[in-house]
Amino acid sequence: MSKTIARALSKSKLPIHSISKLNATMDSSMKRVDLSSFAPRKLHTEILPASLCEKFGAIVYDATDTHIIIVLAKDNEHSKQLLAHHFASQQALGKQLEFALESSFCFYWILKAVGFVEHFYLLDEVDSRLQYVLEQAIALHASDVHIEHKIHYANIRLRIDGILREIGRIELEDFSKLSSKIKLDSRLDITEMRLPQDGRMQKELAHTDYDFRISCMPLLYGESIVLRILHKHSACISLDTLGLSHNAKATLQNAIDKKSGLILVVGPTGSGKSTTLYALIEELQTLEKKIITIEDPIEYQIQAATQIQLNEDLGFSFYQALKSTLRQDPDIILVGEIRDKQTLELALNASLTGHLVLASLHSPDCISSLERLFEMGAARSVLATSLLCILAQRLVGRLCDTCKHKTPQGYIARGCDACNGSGIKGRLVIAQALHINDSLRALFWDDDNSTQTDWRLRLRKALVASNLPTLKDDALQKLAYIDYREIALLE
Image 1 (cartoon, one colour):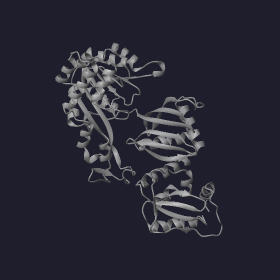
Image 2 (cartoon, helix red, strand yellow):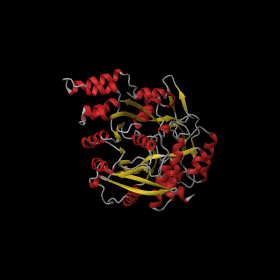
Image 3 (cartoon, rainbow, N blue to C red):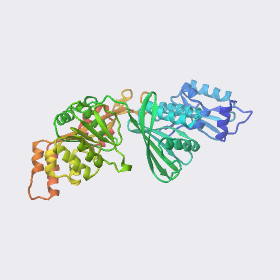
Image 4 (cartoon, rainbow, N blue to C red):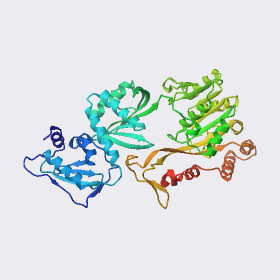
């Protein structure tokens, strides 16, 4: 019997008998198993290595005192016979081999996960293991890596196309080593596990430099560590590549042609606001103008811009940076995020004194953004003079072209090999654009005796009456590419 198989079965508390026969359940009416909540551990890969999982189209789902449960991608009698022969040849005797069919279209992702866990444990050094985790995350186009301590194991999840996918589970002692390595590389306190910590580290992977923003958070059973992947290399981003509707693109193009004013890009966290702002800067790049960006963190390098990295720990905030930036003789200023009244007032003043200001704001749509600006203390007269446009946006999953199909309600995708069972292949931007035209400016200047609340209600009614296209309207224009259930959730 192979030592690896014997050790794996021993760890799973499976008694190994010297004389018996391996029984295999070959029932044609096999039960179905949902693998969407399953992720392999070291034990699973030791019982059936990744190469054999791929060969047989099968994975080890569970091992008990009396059974080994195998999940198949499809009902294949030949694979069952080969697996029965394989386990019999390994002398895993006296155990009943049970088969089940995968029902959640996640099988090809689980195959990747088995290979991931197996390779992770082929590496002896923690440095190599961390390098491997990060390389795999980048290869799979993940934006974040989540490593979380559970009761009996730690799981590793990757955020791909906005969705978290679990790619494997590791032993707690290995999590501890990985956690310490990440903290050391990020210059954090490796002994501190009771308080949150934030840090950064840099890595060269596949001859490319990457920054990683690190967040460590104490949990009931240990820690959660999240690594945000930041691409230091220049990316080809432009208004043409964003996928905006003609109306939204024209609104932005018209705004950046102005010499001064404020352009706002709004949306929740992870909606692609920074990418849109970078695309605008790419359009504005010229050696004849000084472009200064104020960011936390700097996600893309722009050759023609002067990029400022904030440091909140030292008191170098958006407000402090913007205040100093105005003494640097800029033509165009990008403010990564307007977070408070002080920063808003400086941004508005800058837009009034001959600067073109681009900024982001956390707000769900254009109308709510205007209300948020008023809540933060913006004067109507200042907005009437300075505000050029607002673009509200979201990122939604793009349906996999291989497995998507139309239903009476709309389009859906069940998942396949091409999309690793997720049904999603990439993301699309949906947007709502509000151009501040003369009629809106007239409303801002309206100086009657009504209360501020009454005036804002009148503004909202005027915007609704203008038939301003909503985010849902834009999504419906891309109906063939978006899950109808996601469109239904939009307002």
